[in-house]
Every structure is written in C-alpha cells, then in structure tokens.
Image (spheres, rainbow, N blue to C red):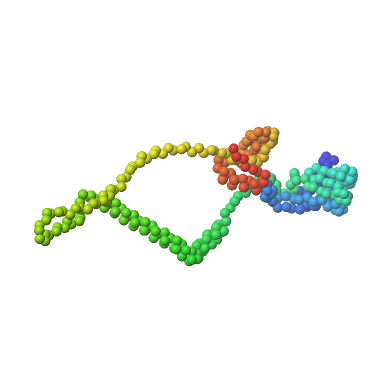
Length: 326
C-alpha cells in the first residue's frame, strides 16, 4: 500500500459520522458549534468531536471499499490489510497500555481493560470550519441603556417622595442660623456708629448751662459756676502691621509608572516569546528588568486608577496578572 490504513480512516472522518475499523472499534463523529473560552478569551471555530466505541466491530465495508478504490487493489487485498492493521494496533495497546494513531488520537488501556480515547485536536474534521482558525477575542464591556433609565427613574421617584419631616428638621436648624447672622450684622452697624460719634467729639466744649444766682439783700461778687470735668475719650488708634511676604514652597510630585505584568522569566528567550505573543494580541508590551527576573508587561500607565481598571479586565483572561509600580 502507498499509504497506511490510518490515513484512510482520517479521510473518511471528514465525510462520514461513523467509521468502523473491523475487529477493533468504531469512530463516531459528533458535530460541535463554535466555543468561546471565557478564561483565555480564545474563540474556537465549529468542530467535530470524535468518540471511540469499542463495541462497533462489525465490518460495514466502508473502510475496505475506500482503500480498495484509492489503492486500486482488490477487495480481498484491502480486507487483509485492514485485518492485519487491527491485529497490530490491538497487540501494541495491550502490551504497552498506550497507543497513538496518527491524526486520530491517543488510546490508553485502563485497569478494568477498558479503552480510553483522547482525540487529536490538531485536526478539525468539520467541513463547516474549513479555513477557520482559533482567534483571541478581547472582552468588550457594554453599558445597558435600559438599566440606566430604570436607575435614573428610581432616583427621581425617591427625590420626589422625600419625607416632609426632613424639611422641618432642616428649617429648625437654618432659621436660628439666619437670625444669629442678622443680629451680628445689626450690632456691627451700631458699633460703627459709636466709633463715628467718638471721632467727631470736641473735648474743649460743654453742653451744660451756667446758672446765675440773683442777690437777696447785698450784692455779692459774681462767682462763675465751675466747669465740671469732662472725660476725653480718645478714638482707638489703628496700627498698621507690615505684611510679611509669602514665600512659595515648591511642591515636588514624585512620578510613578504602573506596569501590568503577564509573567516573570529568568531566561531572556522565554521573555521574548511572551512579548511576541502579547504583540500579536495588540498589547503595548515591554520587558521590565528586575534583579534576577525579566518581567513582561501587557501595558504601562502613568495613572494608577487607569492601571487598576485595565488590570481588572486583564484578570478575566489571566488571573495571575499583577501590578508593578516603579
């Protein structure tokens, strides 16, 4: 034969949902829709899940006929090739407990002599996924406009239906404050008027009248009434103090850079691989040198709040990501 039996089994899995290898078992295809891994953010195209059933051993002629047509050999010769292949892989599985068939999958033999099959995911047997590859999908946060309208409506209803007792309590506090401020202003006006009167006071004049005594029998010499002592109130002096010049103290703001670290590596080649991977995902990546490690960052930020928000989104894809401040 020009090509081995497993090659023709792989070809038939693209076109059929069940391919039986006589005296060994049957391969059953189960179509799967596209899937999104929420942890890694990888979007996988549609695929065909291959299951192995050890009870399907009856020859249906599909595999033997396909080999006979492709190799241009007789039906009996193709049947002999298939039987020999089944005996060969069955013997190897029971002796070494492990068997790998190229492009199909891995077989292991359990303690109870049961066969465990693991599909080879390198080949996608779904024709609907022709030309498609797995892609990395970045999470997009969307704002629900309906929820925002509901929240704003609830807030407006709460504002309109406030308890009137709250307004009464506020009035009981505000009215005394207004009265105190009014009294302080009116008293200030009275104090200013007193100072104005004291400034215009003349200490050498009197407003009291001088009374004269009329004689009874004999005329007495005129004695003027003494002027009472008047206290002179001096107006307060205003002393101007020199204004000290204000000296502006320079404020020094320490600048920091915040890095979101994807991983730390001791070898340069491993760090370069991570940088190349992040660049394919459109991250502004760079290597931050440390003492003994090379830390690879998704991105760097000058504002800590922006770095924390970005770290929160990246942790959905990589929970081990962390924040470095330098």
